[in-house]
Length: 303
Length: 278
Image (cartoon, each protein chain N blue to C red):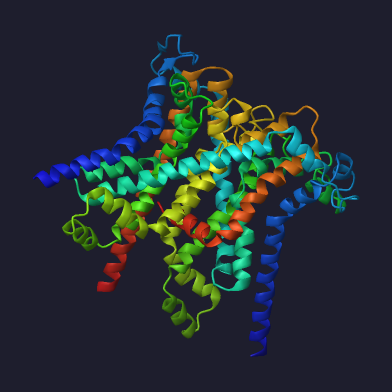
Protein backbone atom coordinates (compact mmCIF):
# COMPACT_ATOMS: atom_id res chain seq x y z
CA UNK A 1 0.00 0.00 0.00
CA UNK A 2 2.78 2.34 0.89
CA UNK A 3 4.45 1.48 -2.38
CA UNK A 4 1.32 2.38 -4.27
CA UNK A 5 0.96 5.68 -2.49
CA UNK A 6 4.51 6.55 -3.36
CA UNK A 7 3.79 5.75 -7.00
CA UNK A 8 0.83 8.11 -7.01
CA UNK A 9 3.06 10.78 -5.48
CA UNK A 10 5.55 10.30 -8.30
CA UNK A 11 2.75 10.46 -10.87
CA UNK A 12 1.41 13.72 -9.48
CA UNK A 13 4.89 15.25 -9.51
CA UNK A 14 5.52 14.19 -13.09
CA UNK A 15 2.13 15.39 -14.31
CA UNK A 16 2.21 18.75 -12.55
CA UNK A 17 4.05 20.82 -15.17
CA UNK A 18 2.49 19.20 -18.25
CA UNK A 19 -1.00 19.57 -16.80
CA UNK A 20 -0.49 23.26 -16.02
CA UNK A 21 1.01 24.17 -19.41
CA UNK A 22 -1.40 22.07 -21.46
CA UNK A 23 -4.48 23.21 -19.58
CA UNK A 24 -3.55 26.87 -19.39
CA UNK A 25 -2.53 27.31 -23.03
CA UNK A 26 -4.78 24.81 -24.79
CA UNK A 27 -7.71 23.32 -22.90
CA UNK A 28 -8.73 26.41 -20.95
CA UNK A 29 -8.75 28.63 -24.08
CA UNK A 30 -10.93 26.05 -25.86
CA UNK A 31 -13.48 26.14 -23.04
CA UNK A 32 -13.18 29.90 -22.77
CA UNK A 33 -14.10 30.21 -26.46
CA UNK A 34 -17.48 28.66 -25.67
CA UNK A 35 -17.99 31.11 -22.84
CA UNK A 36 -16.95 34.13 -24.91
CA UNK A 37 -19.16 33.08 -27.80
CA UNK A 38 -22.20 33.99 -25.70
CA UNK A 39 -20.84 37.42 -24.83
CA UNK A 40 -20.47 40.81 -26.42
CA UNK A 41 -16.98 42.03 -25.64
CA UNK A 42 -14.36 44.25 -27.27
CA UNK A 43 -11.37 42.42 -25.84
CA UNK A 44 -10.34 45.09 -23.34
CA UNK A 45 -9.93 43.56 -19.91
CA UNK A 46 -11.40 46.58 -18.06
CA UNK A 47 -14.58 46.56 -20.14
CA UNK A 48 -17.39 44.32 -18.93
CA UNK A 49 -18.60 41.42 -21.02
CA UNK A 50 -22.32 41.50 -21.76
CA UNK A 51 -24.22 38.23 -21.99
CA UNK A 52 -26.09 37.99 -25.29
CA UNK A 53 -27.06 34.33 -25.40
CA UNK A 54 -26.99 32.88 -28.89
CA UNK A 55 -27.09 36.27 -30.64
CA UNK A 56 -23.56 35.89 -32.01
CA UNK A 57 -24.49 32.62 -33.67
CA UNK A 58 -27.78 33.97 -35.01
CA UNK A 59 -25.92 36.92 -36.49
CA UNK A 60 -23.24 34.65 -37.93
CA UNK A 61 -25.71 32.31 -39.57
CA UNK A 62 -27.47 35.26 -41.19
CA UNK A 63 -24.29 36.59 -42.82
CA UNK A 64 -23.69 35.82 -46.46
CA UNK A 65 -19.94 36.01 -45.95
CA UNK A 66 -20.08 33.11 -43.51
CA UNK A 67 -21.58 30.80 -46.13
CA UNK A 68 -19.08 32.13 -48.62
CA UNK A 69 -16.28 31.14 -46.22
CA UNK A 70 -17.73 27.66 -45.85
CA UNK A 71 -17.90 27.35 -49.63
CA UNK A 72 -14.25 28.39 -49.81
CA UNK A 73 -13.36 25.69 -47.29
CA UNK A 74 -15.27 23.27 -49.52
CA UNK A 75 -13.08 24.38 -52.44
CA UNK A 76 -10.08 23.22 -50.42
CA UNK A 77 -11.79 19.86 -49.86
CA UNK A 78 -12.59 19.49 -53.57
CA UNK A 79 -9.02 20.31 -54.56
CA UNK A 80 -7.74 17.82 -51.97
CA UNK A 81 -9.83 15.08 -53.55
CA UNK A 82 -9.35 15.82 -57.22
CA UNK A 83 -5.80 17.20 -57.23
CA UNK A 84 -3.85 16.20 -54.12
CA UNK A 85 -5.22 12.67 -53.94
CA UNK A 86 -4.51 11.44 -57.49
CA UNK A 87 -1.13 13.16 -57.74
CA UNK A 88 0.22 12.11 -54.35
CA UNK A 89 -1.10 8.55 -54.70
CA UNK A 90 0.38 8.08 -58.16
CA UNK A 91 3.70 9.58 -57.09
CA UNK A 92 3.71 7.26 -54.08
CA UNK A 93 3.12 4.23 -56.33
CA UNK A 94 5.98 5.34 -58.51
CA UNK A 95 8.59 5.92 -55.85
CA UNK A 96 7.57 3.46 -53.12
CA UNK A 97 10.10 0.86 -54.24
CA UNK A 98 13.39 1.62 -52.55
CA UNK A 99 16.28 2.52 -54.82
CA UNK A 100 18.56 5.47 -55.38
CA UNK A 101 16.54 7.24 -58.07
CA UNK A 102 13.32 6.87 -56.10
CA UNK A 103 15.03 8.18 -52.97
CA UNK A 104 16.11 11.31 -54.82
CA UNK A 105 12.65 11.80 -56.34
CA UNK A 106 11.04 11.39 -52.97
CA UNK A 107 13.31 14.07 -51.53
CA UNK A 108 12.44 16.48 -54.31
CA UNK A 109 8.69 15.88 -54.09
CA UNK A 110 8.79 16.34 -50.39
CA UNK A 111 10.65 19.68 -50.30
CA UNK A 112 7.61 21.99 -50.81
CA UNK A 113 5.95 20.53 -47.72
CA UNK A 114 8.65 21.36 -45.25
CA UNK A 115 9.34 24.96 -46.09
CA UNK A 116 7.81 27.78 -44.04
CA UNK A 117 4.41 28.56 -45.50
CA UNK A 118 5.07 32.28 -45.17
CA UNK A 119 7.98 31.86 -47.58
CA UNK A 120 6.32 29.59 -50.13
CA UNK A 121 3.07 31.56 -49.98
CA UNK A 122 4.87 34.84 -50.69
CA UNK A 123 6.87 33.19 -53.40
CA UNK A 124 3.71 32.04 -55.19
CA UNK A 125 2.09 35.44 -54.74
CA UNK A 126 4.96 36.92 -56.73
CA UNK A 127 4.91 34.15 -59.32
CA UNK A 128 1.20 34.77 -59.85
CA UNK A 129 1.40 38.57 -60.10
CA UNK A 130 -0.60 39.85 -63.04
CA UNK A 131 2.08 42.09 -64.54
CA UNK A 132 5.47 40.47 -64.80
CA UNK A 133 4.73 37.36 -62.76
CA UNK A 134 6.52 34.21 -63.92
CA UNK A 135 3.33 32.22 -64.52
CA UNK A 136 1.93 34.83 -66.87
CA UNK A 137 5.31 35.20 -68.56
CA UNK A 138 5.25 31.49 -69.40
CA UNK A 139 1.69 31.68 -70.69
CA UNK A 140 2.51 34.70 -72.83
CA UNK A 141 5.56 32.93 -74.20
CA UNK A 142 3.24 30.23 -75.51
CA UNK A 143 0.90 32.84 -76.91
CA UNK A 144 -1.77 32.58 -74.22
CA UNK A 145 -3.30 35.45 -72.30
CA UNK A 146 -2.06 36.12 -68.78
CA UNK A 147 -4.59 36.15 -65.96
CA UNK A 148 -5.05 38.18 -62.83
CA UNK A 149 -4.83 34.97 -60.80
CA UNK A 150 -5.26 36.37 -57.31
CA UNK A 151 -7.25 39.46 -58.24
CA UNK A 152 -10.14 37.68 -59.91
CA UNK A 153 -12.92 37.14 -57.37
CA UNK A 154 -14.12 33.91 -58.97
CA UNK A 155 -10.76 32.34 -59.58
CA UNK A 156 -8.67 33.43 -56.59
CA UNK A 157 -9.83 30.78 -54.12
CA UNK A 158 -9.15 27.98 -56.60
CA UNK A 159 -5.70 29.36 -57.29
CA UNK A 160 -4.88 29.53 -53.59
CA UNK A 161 -6.21 26.01 -53.08
CA UNK A 162 -3.98 24.80 -55.91
CA UNK A 163 -0.94 26.46 -54.33
CA UNK A 164 -1.96 24.70 -51.12
CA UNK A 165 -2.03 21.46 -53.10
CA UNK A 166 1.49 22.16 -54.36
CA UNK A 167 2.59 22.37 -50.72
CA UNK A 168 0.82 19.24 -49.49
CA UNK A 169 1.26 16.72 -52.28
CA UNK A 170 4.62 15.74 -50.77
CA UNK A 171 3.39 15.00 -47.26
CA UNK A 172 0.42 13.02 -48.53
CA UNK A 173 2.72 11.08 -50.81
CA UNK A 174 4.61 10.01 -47.68
CA UNK A 175 1.36 8.92 -46.06
CA UNK A 176 0.56 6.77 -49.08
CA UNK A 177 4.08 5.34 -49.23
CA UNK A 178 3.69 4.26 -45.60
CA UNK A 179 0.46 2.52 -46.54
CA UNK A 180 1.95 0.89 -49.62
CA UNK A 181 4.98 -0.51 -47.81
CA UNK A 182 2.64 -2.06 -45.25
CA UNK A 183 1.09 -4.32 -47.91
CA UNK A 184 2.63 -7.77 -47.54
CA UNK A 185 5.18 -8.35 -50.30
CA UNK A 186 4.14 -11.96 -50.94
CA UNK A 187 0.65 -10.78 -51.83
CA UNK A 188 2.09 -8.65 -54.63
CA UNK A 189 4.41 -11.47 -55.69
CA UNK A 190 1.57 -13.95 -55.80
CA UNK A 191 -0.38 -11.64 -58.08
CA UNK A 192 2.61 -11.35 -60.41
CA UNK A 193 2.99 -15.13 -60.49
CA UNK A 194 -0.71 -15.46 -61.23
CA UNK A 195 -0.24 -13.13 -64.17
CA UNK A 196 -2.25 -10.15 -63.00
CA UNK A 197 -1.66 -6.98 -65.00
CA UNK A 198 -0.48 -3.91 -63.12
CA UNK A 199 -3.94 -2.41 -63.52
CA UNK A 200 -5.58 -5.49 -61.98
CA UNK A 201 -3.00 -5.40 -59.21
CA UNK A 202 -3.92 -1.83 -58.35
CA UNK A 203 -7.66 -2.50 -58.35
CA UNK A 204 -7.73 -5.85 -56.57
CA UNK A 205 -4.76 -5.79 -54.24
CA UNK A 206 -3.39 -2.34 -53.61
CA UNK A 207 -6.58 -0.32 -53.24
CA UNK A 208 -8.40 -2.77 -50.92
CA UNK A 209 -5.28 -2.94 -48.74
CA UNK A 210 -4.94 0.83 -48.53
CA UNK A 211 -8.34 1.46 -46.99
CA UNK A 212 -6.94 2.52 -43.63
CA UNK A 213 -4.56 4.94 -45.35
CA UNK A 214 -7.33 6.42 -47.49
CA UNK A 215 -9.32 6.96 -44.34
CA UNK A 216 -6.45 8.88 -42.78
CA UNK A 217 -6.08 10.96 -45.93
CA UNK A 218 -9.78 11.73 -46.13
CA UNK A 219 -10.13 12.69 -42.48
CA UNK A 220 -7.09 14.93 -42.42
CA UNK A 221 -7.88 16.51 -45.79
CA UNK A 222 -11.43 17.44 -44.82
CA UNK A 223 -10.71 18.47 -41.24
CA UNK A 224 -7.64 20.37 -42.46
CA UNK A 225 -9.69 22.28 -45.02
CA UNK A 226 -12.01 23.59 -42.31
CA UNK A 227 -8.99 24.95 -40.44
CA UNK A 228 -7.16 26.63 -43.32
CA UNK A 229 -5.67 29.94 -42.26
CA UNK A 230 -1.98 30.51 -42.93
CA UNK A 231 -1.99 30.34 -46.69
CA UNK A 232 -4.96 32.69 -47.05
CA UNK A 233 -3.42 35.12 -44.59
CA UNK A 234 -0.13 35.14 -46.50
CA UNK A 235 -1.42 35.18 -50.06
CA UNK A 236 -4.68 37.13 -50.23
CA UNK A 237 -5.73 38.04 -46.70
CA UNK A 238 -9.27 37.13 -47.68
CA UNK A 239 -9.30 39.43 -50.68
CA UNK A 240 -10.18 40.63 -53.21
CA UNK A 241 -13.03 41.86 -51.04
CA UNK A 242 -14.14 38.78 -49.14
CA UNK A 243 -13.69 36.42 -52.08
CA UNK A 244 -11.15 34.15 -50.40
CA UNK A 245 -12.24 34.43 -46.77
CA UNK A 246 -12.33 31.12 -44.89
CA UNK A 247 -13.84 30.58 -41.42
CA UNK A 248 -10.50 31.09 -39.66
CA UNK A 249 -9.72 34.38 -41.42
CA UNK A 250 -13.23 35.64 -40.67
CA UNK A 251 -12.66 34.81 -37.02
CA UNK A 252 -9.29 36.55 -37.02
CA UNK A 253 -10.65 39.69 -38.66
CA UNK A 254 -13.72 39.94 -36.44
CA UNK A 255 -11.76 39.49 -33.24
CA UNK A 256 -8.51 41.28 -33.89
CA UNK A 257 -9.32 43.89 -36.53
CA UNK A 258 -12.84 44.85 -35.42
CA UNK A 259 -12.38 43.96 -31.74
CA UNK A 260 -15.49 41.77 -31.65
CA UNK A 261 -14.13 39.07 -29.40
CA UNK A 262 -17.51 37.50 -28.65
CA UNK A 263 -18.52 37.31 -32.28
CA UNK A 264 -15.07 36.04 -33.26
CA UNK A 265 -15.31 33.34 -30.60
CA UNK A 266 -18.60 32.13 -32.02
CA UNK A 267 -16.80 31.50 -35.32
CA UNK A 268 -14.11 29.66 -33.36
CA UNK A 269 -16.80 27.45 -31.82
CA UNK A 270 -18.20 26.68 -35.28
CA UNK A 271 -14.72 25.71 -36.55
CA UNK A 272 -14.21 23.50 -33.51
CA UNK A 273 -17.56 21.76 -33.84
CA UNK A 274 -17.16 21.21 -37.58
CA UNK A 275 -13.66 19.77 -37.13
CA UNK A 276 -14.83 17.41 -34.38
CA UNK A 277 -17.94 16.37 -36.27
CA UNK A 278 -15.92 15.62 -39.38
CA UNK A 279 -13.21 13.66 -37.54
CA UNK A 280 -15.59 11.53 -35.51
CA UNK A 281 -18.36 11.36 -38.09
CA UNK A 282 -16.04 10.23 -40.86
CA UNK A 283 -14.34 7.68 -38.65
CA UNK A 284 -17.72 6.33 -37.63
CA UNK A 285 -19.10 6.14 -41.16
CA UNK A 286 -15.99 4.57 -42.66
CA UNK A 287 -15.69 2.02 -39.85
CA UNK A 288 -19.34 1.16 -40.20
CA UNK A 289 -18.93 0.38 -43.87
CA UNK A 290 -15.94 -1.78 -43.09
CA UNK A 291 -17.95 -3.76 -40.57
CA UNK A 292 -20.74 -4.38 -43.06
CA UNK A 293 -18.27 -5.58 -45.64
CA UNK A 294 -16.60 -7.88 -43.15
CA UNK A 295 -19.94 -9.48 -42.31
CA UNK A 296 -20.71 -9.93 -46.00
CA UNK A 297 -17.36 -11.53 -46.54
CA UNK A 298 -17.92 -13.95 -43.68
CA UNK A 299 -21.31 -14.95 -45.10
CA UNK A 300 -19.91 -15.46 -48.53
CA UNK A 301 -17.16 -17.54 -47.01
CA UNK A 302 -19.70 -19.69 -45.18
CA UNK A 303 -21.70 -20.36 -48.32
CA UNK B 1 6.70 -11.09 -76.84
CA UNK B 2 7.78 -8.07 -78.81
CA UNK B 3 4.52 -6.33 -78.31
CA UNK B 4 4.65 -7.01 -74.61
CA UNK B 5 8.11 -5.51 -74.44
CA UNK B 6 7.04 -2.45 -76.38
CA UNK B 7 4.17 -1.91 -74.01
CA UNK B 8 6.47 -2.19 -71.05
CA UNK B 9 8.90 0.33 -72.47
CA UNK B 10 6.03 2.65 -73.21
CA UNK B 11 4.86 2.32 -69.62
CA UNK B 12 8.35 3.03 -68.33
CA UNK B 13 8.67 6.05 -70.56
CA UNK B 14 5.28 7.29 -69.39
CA UNK B 15 6.09 7.04 -65.70
CA UNK B 16 9.54 8.53 -66.28
CA UNK B 17 7.98 11.48 -68.06
CA UNK B 18 5.43 11.98 -65.30
CA UNK B 19 8.14 11.79 -62.65
CA UNK B 20 10.19 14.39 -64.51
CA UNK B 21 7.23 16.75 -64.97
CA UNK B 22 6.49 16.68 -61.28
CA UNK B 23 10.14 17.33 -60.48
CA UNK B 24 9.83 20.51 -62.53
CA UNK B 25 6.58 21.48 -60.79
CA UNK B 26 8.15 20.94 -57.36
CA UNK B 27 11.41 22.72 -58.00
CA UNK B 28 10.67 25.37 -60.60
CA UNK B 29 9.21 27.96 -58.20
CA UNK B 30 12.17 27.52 -55.87
CA UNK B 31 14.75 27.80 -58.64
CA UNK B 32 12.96 30.82 -60.02
CA UNK B 33 13.08 32.51 -56.62
CA UNK B 34 16.75 31.68 -56.31
CA UNK B 35 17.47 33.14 -59.73
CA UNK B 36 15.43 36.26 -59.01
CA UNK B 37 17.19 36.84 -55.74
CA UNK B 38 20.25 37.92 -57.71
CA UNK B 39 18.39 40.39 -59.92
CA UNK B 40 17.03 43.90 -59.56
CA UNK B 41 13.37 44.79 -60.21
CA UNK B 42 14.12 45.52 -63.86
CA UNK B 43 15.69 42.13 -64.39
CA UNK B 44 12.84 40.26 -62.68
CA UNK B 45 10.20 41.98 -64.78
CA UNK B 46 12.06 42.45 -68.03
CA UNK B 47 13.59 39.02 -68.48
CA UNK B 48 12.16 36.71 -65.82
CA UNK B 49 13.88 33.56 -67.02
CA UNK B 50 17.22 34.96 -68.06
CA UNK B 51 20.26 34.39 -65.91
CA UNK B 52 21.18 37.50 -63.94
CA UNK B 53 23.25 39.86 -66.07
CA UNK B 54 25.77 40.53 -63.41
CA UNK B 55 25.91 38.29 -60.42
CA UNK B 56 25.53 40.40 -57.28
CA UNK B 57 24.80 39.83 -53.63
CA UNK B 58 23.13 43.25 -53.28
CA UNK B 59 19.71 41.79 -52.52
CA UNK B 60 21.11 39.60 -49.77
CA UNK B 61 22.98 42.53 -48.27
CA UNK B 62 19.72 44.49 -48.38
CA UNK B 63 17.79 41.67 -46.73
CA UNK B 64 20.33 41.27 -43.96
CA UNK B 65 20.80 44.98 -43.31
CA UNK B 66 17.32 46.43 -43.68
CA UNK B 67 15.07 43.71 -42.36
CA UNK B 68 14.89 41.62 -39.23
CA UNK B 69 15.05 38.30 -41.03
CA UNK B 70 18.22 37.06 -39.34
CA UNK B 71 16.82 38.08 -35.99
CA UNK B 72 13.60 36.25 -36.93
CA UNK B 73 15.46 33.08 -37.79
CA UNK B 74 17.37 33.25 -34.55
CA UNK B 75 14.15 33.78 -32.55
CA UNK B 76 12.35 30.94 -34.32
CA UNK B 77 15.28 28.69 -33.63
CA UNK B 78 15.35 29.56 -29.91
CA UNK B 79 11.58 29.12 -29.56
CA UNK B 80 11.87 25.76 -31.33
CA UNK B 81 14.67 24.48 -29.10
CA UNK B 82 12.89 25.50 -25.91
CA UNK B 83 9.54 24.03 -26.90
CA UNK B 84 11.18 20.83 -28.12
CA UNK B 85 12.93 20.40 -24.77
CA UNK B 86 9.67 20.96 -22.90
CA UNK B 87 7.66 18.65 -25.12
CA UNK B 88 10.16 15.80 -24.98
CA UNK B 89 10.36 15.88 -21.19
CA UNK B 90 6.61 16.29 -20.74
CA UNK B 91 5.70 13.51 -23.15
CA UNK B 92 8.14 11.14 -21.44
CA UNK B 93 6.65 11.99 -18.04
CA UNK B 94 3.08 11.44 -19.20
CA UNK B 95 3.87 8.15 -20.93
CA UNK B 96 5.68 6.95 -17.82
CA UNK B 97 2.72 7.78 -15.61
CA UNK B 98 0.57 5.68 -17.93
CA UNK B 99 3.10 2.86 -17.67
CA UNK B 100 3.11 2.96 -13.87
CA UNK B 101 -0.51 1.86 -13.97
CA UNK B 102 -1.98 4.35 -11.52
CA UNK B 103 -5.77 4.76 -11.18
CA UNK B 104 -7.47 6.78 -13.96
CA UNK B 105 -4.47 6.34 -16.22
CA UNK B 106 -6.71 6.00 -19.30
CA UNK B 107 -8.58 9.20 -18.51
CA UNK B 108 -5.29 11.03 -17.99
CA UNK B 109 -3.92 9.72 -21.25
CA UNK B 110 -7.06 10.66 -23.18
CA UNK B 111 -6.94 14.15 -21.70
CA UNK B 112 -3.42 14.69 -22.97
CA UNK B 113 -3.98 13.32 -26.47
CA UNK B 114 -7.30 15.15 -26.96
CA UNK B 115 -5.34 17.99 -28.55
CA UNK B 116 -4.79 15.90 -31.66
CA UNK B 117 -8.40 16.41 -32.71
CA UNK B 118 -8.90 19.93 -31.32
CA UNK B 119 -8.13 22.64 -33.88
CA UNK B 120 -5.76 25.24 -32.45
CA UNK B 121 -7.73 27.92 -34.25
CA UNK B 122 -10.52 27.60 -31.72
CA UNK B 123 -8.10 28.79 -29.03
CA UNK B 124 -6.92 31.95 -30.76
CA UNK B 125 -9.40 34.55 -29.55
CA UNK B 126 -9.26 33.72 -25.85
CA UNK B 127 -5.57 32.90 -26.00
CA UNK B 128 -4.73 36.47 -26.93
CA UNK B 129 -6.54 37.83 -23.88
CA UNK B 130 -5.26 35.09 -21.55
CA UNK B 131 -1.65 35.74 -22.56
CA UNK B 132 -2.21 39.46 -22.15
CA UNK B 133 -3.70 39.14 -18.70
CA UNK B 134 -0.78 36.97 -17.60
CA UNK B 135 1.59 39.69 -18.81
CA UNK B 136 3.16 37.21 -21.20
CA UNK B 137 2.72 39.16 -24.41
CA UNK B 138 6.03 39.51 -26.29
CA UNK B 139 7.64 37.10 -23.84
CA UNK B 140 9.54 33.96 -24.68
CA UNK B 141 7.76 32.12 -21.87
CA UNK B 142 4.34 32.92 -23.32
CA UNK B 143 4.97 31.79 -26.87
CA UNK B 144 7.02 28.75 -25.87
CA UNK B 145 4.26 27.73 -23.46
CA UNK B 146 1.71 27.97 -26.24
CA UNK B 147 3.88 26.00 -28.66
CA UNK B 148 4.52 23.34 -26.05
CA UNK B 149 0.83 23.02 -25.19
CA UNK B 150 -0.48 22.91 -28.74
CA UNK B 151 2.10 20.39 -29.98
CA UNK B 152 2.11 18.13 -26.94
CA UNK B 153 -0.64 15.67 -27.84
CA UNK B 154 0.98 14.06 -30.85
CA UNK B 155 4.27 13.68 -28.95
CA UNK B 156 2.46 11.97 -26.07
CA UNK B 157 0.73 9.66 -28.50
CA UNK B 158 4.01 8.67 -30.15
CA UNK B 159 6.01 8.37 -26.93
CA UNK B 160 3.36 6.26 -25.26
CA UNK B 161 3.11 3.93 -28.22
CA UNK B 162 6.86 3.41 -28.17
CA UNK B 163 7.12 2.98 -24.41
CA UNK B 164 4.51 0.24 -24.51
CA UNK B 165 6.90 -1.74 -26.67
CA UNK B 166 9.61 -1.75 -23.99
CA UNK B 167 9.48 -4.88 -21.84
CA UNK B 168 8.10 -4.43 -18.33
CA UNK B 169 10.58 -6.93 -16.99
CA UNK B 170 13.06 -4.10 -17.19
CA UNK B 171 11.04 -2.04 -14.70
CA UNK B 172 10.68 -4.98 -12.35
CA UNK B 173 14.38 -5.75 -12.47
CA UNK B 174 15.21 -2.12 -11.83
CA UNK B 175 12.82 -1.96 -8.89
CA UNK B 176 14.26 -5.10 -7.35
CA UNK B 177 17.70 -3.54 -7.65
CA UNK B 178 16.36 -0.59 -5.66
CA UNK B 179 16.10 1.86 -8.51
CA UNK B 180 13.64 4.69 -7.82
CA UNK B 181 10.88 5.70 -10.21
CA UNK B 182 12.58 8.88 -11.40
CA UNK B 183 15.82 7.09 -12.07
CA UNK B 184 13.92 4.34 -13.86
CA UNK B 185 12.36 6.93 -16.16
CA UNK B 186 15.31 9.16 -16.83
CA UNK B 187 18.29 6.81 -16.80
CA UNK B 188 16.82 3.45 -17.81
CA UNK B 189 13.85 4.10 -20.11
CA UNK B 190 14.78 7.42 -21.72
CA UNK B 191 17.95 6.13 -23.41
CA UNK B 192 15.90 3.30 -24.92
CA UNK B 193 13.45 5.80 -26.42
CA UNK B 194 16.00 7.58 -28.60
CA UNK B 195 14.32 6.73 -31.93
CA UNK B 196 10.93 8.09 -30.92
CA UNK B 197 12.53 11.10 -29.24
CA UNK B 198 14.27 12.02 -32.48
CA UNK B 199 10.94 11.73 -34.28
CA UNK B 200 9.31 14.02 -31.75
CA UNK B 201 12.17 16.51 -31.98
CA UNK B 202 11.87 16.77 -35.74
CA UNK B 203 8.09 16.95 -35.87
CA UNK B 204 8.03 19.68 -33.26
CA UNK B 205 10.82 21.57 -34.95
CA UNK B 206 9.01 21.64 -38.29
CA UNK B 207 5.81 22.86 -36.72
CA UNK B 208 7.27 25.50 -34.42
CA UNK B 209 9.93 26.82 -36.78
CA UNK B 210 7.37 27.31 -39.56
CA UNK B 211 4.64 28.67 -37.33
CA UNK B 212 2.89 31.84 -38.39
CA UNK B 213 -0.38 32.27 -36.54
CA UNK B 214 0.82 32.28 -32.93
CA UNK B 215 3.65 34.66 -33.61
CA UNK B 216 1.25 37.11 -35.27
CA UNK B 217 -1.00 36.86 -32.27
CA UNK B 218 1.38 36.82 -29.33
CA UNK B 219 4.34 38.89 -30.52
CA UNK B 220 4.15 42.54 -31.49
CA UNK B 221 7.72 43.52 -30.66
CA UNK B 222 9.72 43.24 -33.87
CA UNK B 223 12.89 42.12 -32.15
CA UNK B 224 11.04 39.09 -30.76
CA UNK B 225 9.23 38.19 -33.98
CA UNK B 226 9.62 34.81 -35.60
CA UNK B 227 10.95 34.07 -39.06
CA UNK B 228 7.49 34.00 -40.67
CA UNK B 229 6.53 37.39 -39.27
CA UNK B 230 9.87 38.93 -40.25
CA UNK B 231 9.36 37.62 -43.76
CA UNK B 232 5.81 38.95 -43.95
CA UNK B 233 7.18 42.40 -43.17
CA UNK B 234 8.77 42.46 -46.64
CA UNK B 235 5.31 42.37 -48.11
CA UNK B 236 3.95 45.34 -46.20
CA UNK B 237 6.75 47.69 -47.24
CA UNK B 238 5.35 50.38 -49.49
CA UNK B 239 8.23 50.26 -51.95
CA UNK B 240 8.49 46.59 -52.74
CA UNK B 241 11.98 45.44 -53.53
CA UNK B 242 11.29 42.19 -55.35
CA UNK B 243 14.88 41.07 -55.52
CA UNK B 244 15.27 41.71 -51.80
CA UNK B 245 12.08 39.81 -51.05
CA UNK B 246 13.21 36.84 -53.10
CA UNK B 247 16.51 36.97 -51.24
CA UNK B 248 14.56 36.89 -47.97
CA UNK B 249 12.54 33.91 -49.18
CA UNK B 250 15.73 32.07 -50.16
CA UNK B 251 17.37 32.86 -46.82
CA UNK B 252 14.41 31.40 -44.95
CA UNK B 253 14.12 28.34 -47.17
CA UNK B 254 17.77 27.30 -47.30
CA UNK B 255 18.25 26.14 -43.67
CA UNK B 256 15.22 23.86 -43.96
CA UNK B 257 16.55 22.25 -47.12
CA UNK B 258 19.95 21.69 -45.50
CA UNK B 259 18.35 20.23 -42.38
CA UNK B 260 16.21 17.98 -44.54
CA UNK B 261 19.17 16.68 -46.48
CA UNK B 262 20.93 15.78 -43.22
CA UNK B 263 17.98 14.27 -41.35
CA UNK B 264 15.99 12.95 -44.28
CA UNK B 265 15.42 9.50 -42.83
CA UNK B 266 14.22 10.74 -39.45
CA UNK B 267 11.98 13.40 -41.00
CA UNK B 268 10.28 10.95 -43.31
CA UNK B 269 9.77 8.43 -40.54
CA UNK B 270 8.51 11.15 -38.22
CA UNK B 271 5.99 12.38 -40.73
CA UNK B 272 4.80 8.92 -41.54
CA UNK B 273 4.35 8.24 -37.82
CA UNK B 274 2.67 11.59 -37.27
CA UNK B 275 0.20 11.09 -40.05
CA UNK B 276 -1.05 7.79 -38.72
CA UNK B 277 -3.28 9.12 -36.03
CA UNK B 278 -6.76 8.62 -37.53
